Image (cartoon, rainbow, N blue to C red; front, side, top):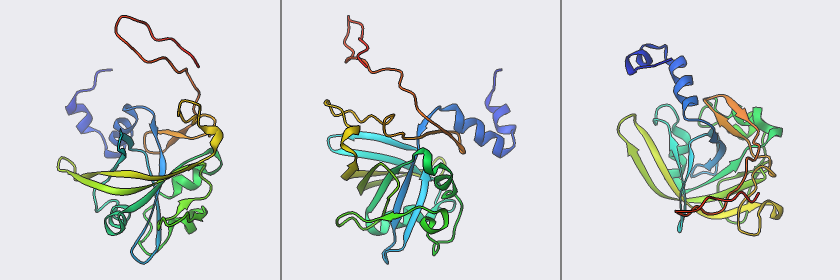
Length: 210
């Protein structure tokens, strides 16, 4: 099939959203934990989290338009700190339920059945059930005028995960951690390693070593 912009724009909006969201392929999906200035906890599922850089250690995510998803962004702007928590098979449905539009005064932790975990001096909660999680401090919010979304960039301030997930060269084995990935807006997947390769250089072929 050959889909032109005019065809895509003619589709019913949920059909179009499913098509475009799944077109980009498998994505990381995590729960972002925040708290307002009074310590009220919020939790939301996001599948647009992306590595920005390693030095400094920066991670970004796309926040939907403020009217559609206001609480996470507002809390990050107010406190400057948030957590990102990987999702695992035992609580996929709980994580997905956090995408429901609960009122600001209702904590998704309570509604979906996940446990707050407070670590050291980090104000917003982590998800206790998550095996890989990290805290970030807000560095920059970049408005995207084209569709009124926001690129939120944070600096990693703390990471918590099990020691055996990290290999000798610093690689985190997320397959061992059973981290879930996603496609589209409502589909979740287990991972299966396809191999790691040596650093690519001109004039040579990479060698699979794992």
